[in-house]
Length: 284
Image 1 (cartoon, rainbow, N blue to C red):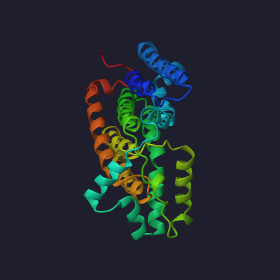
Image 2: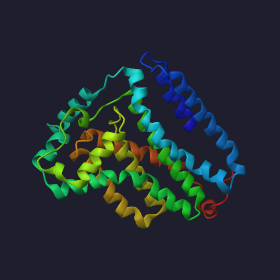
Image 3: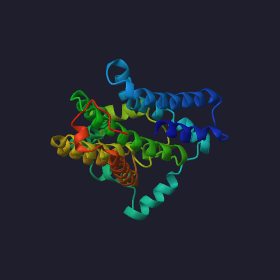
C-alpha cells in the first residue's frame, strides 16, 4: 500500500508545475516504494530486535514527511489553484452560511474555545498513543492491523489533497477573535498550524478522518478507551470548524471517509486464535 501511494503521489510530478528539484523528490518516492517492498520481504524473518521495531513503526514515522510534501505536489498539479469556491458553494447550500466563520462569532466563549482547540490538538497524540499501547502489550498482529488502517486512511485523504486541493477557511478568513485570541490553547493551536501546515490540505479533513478511524480501532482493540476516544473525536471535529481550520463539509466528508477506509481495512483482521499469539504472523 505504501508503494502504491508512492506511485500515485509521484504522478503529480509529471505535471507542468513541478518544482525545479523534482528529480530528487521522484527519487525519494522510488526509495520509499522500494523500502516498503523490501520491508515486506524482511518481515517474516525479522520478528525481534531493532530491525523488527523499524519495520513495524516506519509506516507511521513516514506520515509527517508525506504530509510535508503535499503543498509541493498539489502546486505541481494545479499551479496554486485551489477549489475553495466549490466547497464554499456546497457549504452555503447546506447551511445557508459559512459555519467556520459564523460559529465563533455568535459564540465567542473563551472556555468553549479553549476546550475545542485542546481537542483539535489532541489529534497528534491520538495518532501515535493507541498504537504504542497495543505494541507495548505485545499484540503485534493487532498493532499491524491498526497501522494498516491508519495509513490507508491517511493515504486516501492525501490523494485528495494532491489532486483536489482546498485551502480551508484559515487561509481565506480572519482567525476567530472577540477575546478568544487571549486563550493559551488557542495561541498554541494556531502556532502549531502556522509552523507546520500544508496548504491545500483541508478537504476532506484528515484530522477528523483519522480521529474517526482511530476511534473505531480503539473500540475494536482497546474497548475500555472507546468512550474517551469518541468524546475527543467529537470535540476535535467541532474544534475544526469553531477554530476556523476547516469548512463544515470538510469535517462531514472526512468523518465518512475515515470510517469507510478503517472499516474496509479491518476486513483483513486475522481470526481470534491468530490474535491470541501476538508474535506469530498470520498464515499466508
